[in-house]
Length: 177
Image (cartoon, rainbow, N blue to C red; front, side, top):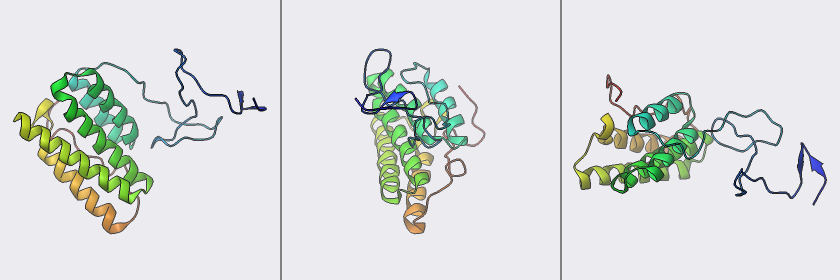
């Protein structure tokens, strides 16, 4: 192995409690790895089982705080733990959050591509299931938001402020459930 650096051997792999490889580097608010020892933001815990309403509410808080990468983690948990018939919904929502993440990081091409892919996924899921407002989310409005943001980032060629451009998962004035 190499010499020790910030309490970690160079060349050693970070591991979680179960021994699986897991990068323990701190992350910034957009999920980018920072150097070991740097001050990052608290990571979103993985594998948390939430009700769909809790997932939507927690993801909205993270989006509003400018942390779409972390919102994607919440959607990913819902996608993995939820019923099979909702997997594509949650996967599409995760793609929207990752698209916003990339747009905020300045990855214009990747951000626009993921925003459109997520818009297509939630639109297709709604059309296949006949559920355009699952858990009080307006999927048509989310798709319009995503496609509009994709156009903006491609036109401007610049990163966006994640919190300022975050979508409203539940329509204006929509209550929580």
